[in-house]
Image (cartoon, rainbow, N blue to C red; front, side, top):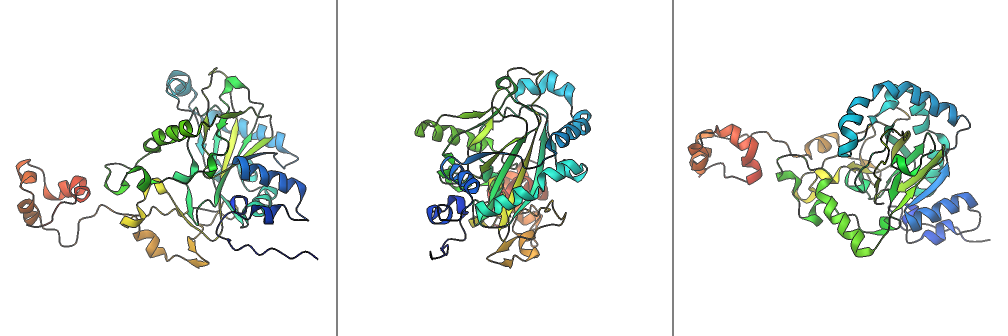
Length: 350
């Protein structure tokens, strides 16, 4: 009898583990699970048929229900030209069919087999047209500790041709390190506004050029779904015909027993972590952040993100004395500190 493999790295998703062979190439692994796992491990994505026998009816009902909720005039007049698609976030809150797709039990079971932890859906995005979105990794938007316990499942609600702006992705890019603010020299804490993924885009383009990776597109058939890993570079191609539709749904999933946060807005070693407190779409309840089986105290989660309040010992006259240029500019001490001073690390007193 073969010995059961005990995974020494439970904090790494099984499909990305250095022990992939021991986990998925062993006897008894379902052949379809193995096929999907291999695709994810080597390419960062896998294609499946969405597992719901009533999918066609679901897709048509969703399209009928959401169609009039999009700003179509904006799309034709401006959005198409500037690469700004149409979307509805979290339609699961009012549409049971969107929720049914997001909470599909077969998908949840599959993700548990692939990652080694229970999955839970936390966000849906429904698109009627192409996103035309710059390539990006979800890891800067949605990350976890341990890292990489996040994935997306994109499902086509119709056949999608080249002129409708299909998905694009860069095979193998998921194997690159996850690069965050400290790697690109950005301190989000001291920026005037929350950064967007645009601060990473030149780096991603440079990586693609350096590695010579060529994009692939997914010209999906209705009912096909694409699973992608957190660090896979992906986006949307230019939609060649703005009269075409590209109906689809993305569901984003996290996995149990992790801390969840937005790296793009965080500087962890500077004391700034933008934790995410998100609902599990299955239950509707907020999923607590956790670390190695222990819940992170709510007060810690709430205080980890840097706020812009005045220090308890703030004194306007002392602030002016320490910063005479502020007084000379005719700006209020409190106003200046909240807008600029705290980011510039101004002295509070001489």
